[in-house]
Length: 510
Image (cartoon, rainbow, N blue to C red):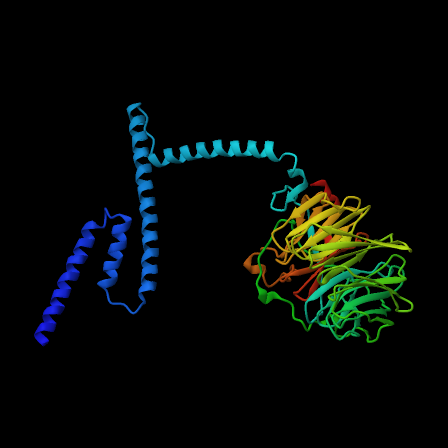
């Protein structure tokens, strides 16, 4: 028996050698069927722990890769023959041109010819429609100055909302996920008042149009109206931040993130109880705003409703229903009794309270993802931003289609419009803040860092300059009349930033 086993083993080895030899001979001219047979022979002649189905799949994949390489190899051979033929023809005419240079020149000629044809076709085919759609990736010659002036650091968690008071003294308000709202001196960056009345994330803050009163919305399912009294500190000279173009950018490390236990809110006065608490929602109150005149307030909630309240009595006046999913934002018209609410159902709705007997509603459907905010501008225009990476400008008299569309590379959060100059500030998930005009032309991009590049011997003599946002930018707010900072941004890096935007230069370079 041992002799028989040895002879069988030797016969099997000889058979495998013959198969491998036949494989090496027939490999170059094998058809698809022959290759399949060879794969089966290889399976039979090799020992493996893999199941046969897995091995078949792997062999099929390797076969496909081999065929791709063969095709590329044949194409290269054909191209090389063509280049050699052209070189021989030119040499016969008394010219000597390297094959590589010739092929490159041919490719350039063909590319330029096809590009010109495509350009002409696009111009003739889409000439009527392209004026309504503006891409944010289009290069512009604008080199507007966007200067970072102040950082407001003191929150212990991300900042959802930022707002500027409409009455004197003008202060900055921030609403944070750390359950607090803070009021800041714009000039010095010092915290003036800390509100701690909420037991949930503070998602929104808005100031009363004529009084020192603030309205905050919270994840504790309430909105609070509270009074503040501030005394502005003596302004100090502002650090001379290096002026940086809106298109310049320097990447920075996450290690530079400000400490959440900043000194900005450690010693400021604290307000612990509201004047009025608005309690009618069954879910998170994500936003709130004052109606014109300040006698009524509107709130938007994740319970899919928006509520209109009487401020003096705290009574619910109207419950605005109709959205199919959670609301994300609400905004009121500065001069008329109009409210716009946005939702995760990809729509935003316009509510008209100008006629006490008729409360009409109009639905705007133009986005394909969550509408993160919709705000009023001058005249009859509304600007909406969405997670579908677009911002649309609408005419309230024509709801069928937007009058301008801005396409971006990242989701857009709570936008703000400079009413006087008609400039839109877009905060993005990717830490960017971009500026556009109402027709959709990009004006500038705020820098994420404005550090100077200094010689090594000056690194320890020059103070570290302020930096831009290092996390998602949640909200923007314009303050057109302020002489120092006319744009504010906040984000989940736990800080708000005050910017000086050179608007005349911005529009002149447009």
